[in-house]
Structure formats: C-alpha cells, structure tokens
Amino acid sequence: MMDTDLFLYVERLRAHELRAQAEHARLAGKPVHAVRRWEIRLGWTLVEMGLRLVHRRPAHN
Image (cartoon, rainbow, N blue to C red; front, side, top):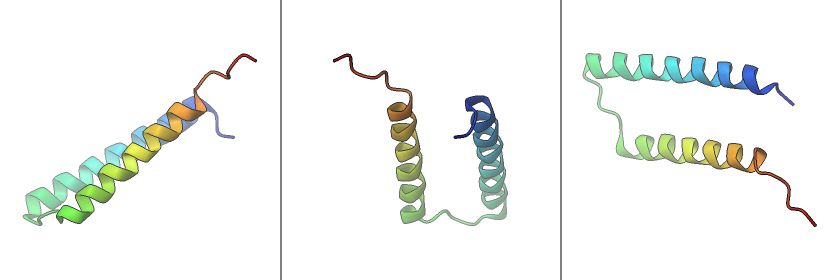
C-alpha cells in the first residue's frame, strides 16, 4: 500500500498535469467533448469515494 503523503503528492502532480493539458487545449481552441467531461467527472467521483472508504473508521462490534 502506498504511503498517504506520497499518494497525495502523486495525485497533486497528476492534477497539475491535467490542468496544464486542459489549459493547452483551451488555448488551442480544441473543445472538450461532453462525454469526455462526464468521464473525467465520474472518474474523480470514484476516486473520492474510494478515498472515503479507505479512510472510514472501522465499526465497533
């Protein structure tokens, strides 16, 4: 399992790369296809849900 700090660093780096790509595409005048926007949104929602599950406290029995 990856260290939490390292995971956050990698994710921040990837987010920075994605923002740079989006800015490049925006400046180039390339429209982002609506389906692709939904795929990206769904992907990040799944990542967020996964992180919430990982950080969830165990139930006391």
